[in-house]
Length: 68
Image (cartoon, rainbow, N blue to C red; front, side):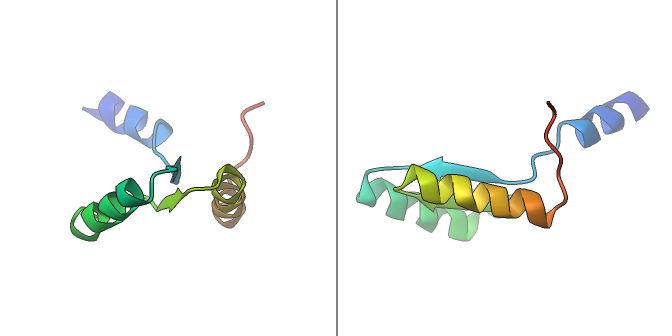
């Protein structure tokens, strides 16, 4: 049980960004997220650069360092 808790802490997601070009699909995902509250922030965008910028902001906010 202890090992599972430790693995969970190591594999925790800080944030997720999705790039979805289809506007109807983006609306559907956002609607779904009104009912499903994940334990981490999620960002939906049609523009890859916006999604990457948001992820970088979340990373900086949470003081997450690169693995490299």
